Image (cartoon, rainbow, N blue to C red; front, side):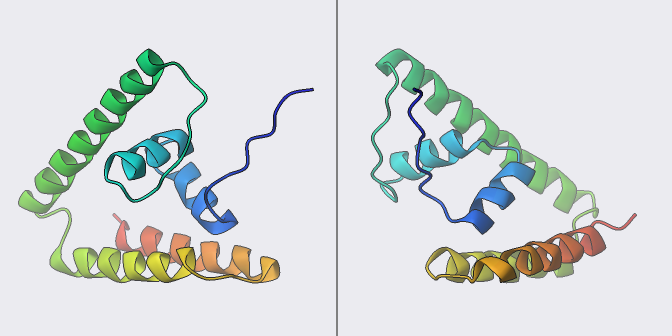
Length: 120
């Protein structure tokens, strides 16, 4: 029987990760590297450090993308404000318990706000 890995994240964070550029493992690695999460990894050292490098490269690409989009006027100051406010809410959600029946509502609101900010 296969081991079922228990997630370090609640359902809402898991859903957000699935919509992001990162995998759950990569987020765990980034948090681990920044001493924000202590997690045991059941992979070889070589595989772990390969994933550390992949995670770092994705994070660098993300930062360059934000700089590019902001510099070209695609990502506006109001968009940055929306991202900041959503990030603050995610921090609160990460530290609290959300009723399972409300999880889809939370994700739908986040999705709607992001899609509205990305309207082209």
